[in-house]
Image (cartoon, rainbow, N blue to C red):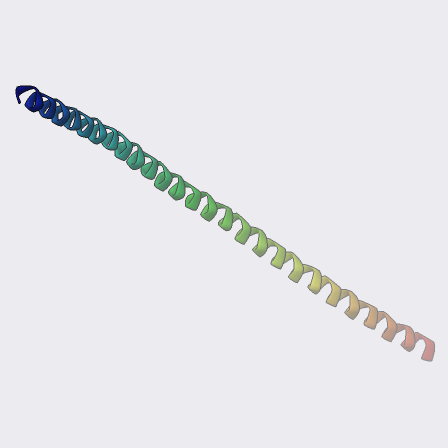
Length: 96
């Protein structure tokens, strides 16, 4: 009977030790997961900042392209007006 009780005590001690080991392992894994989550959040914040900087650059470039397009359209219009004036003057000279 004494041996039976000792065996039960030993088995319970082993289960307690295993539970303690499992709890320690779970604690370590939780800390690792928290660190990974923190790192991912920081990475996401930095990625968002980088994206916003790039978007501002793209906006500036698009504004420059639009200004250039307006410039080219203005020059094209001026060229057509000049050609029309030349054509009109040519006709005036022909009539004279």
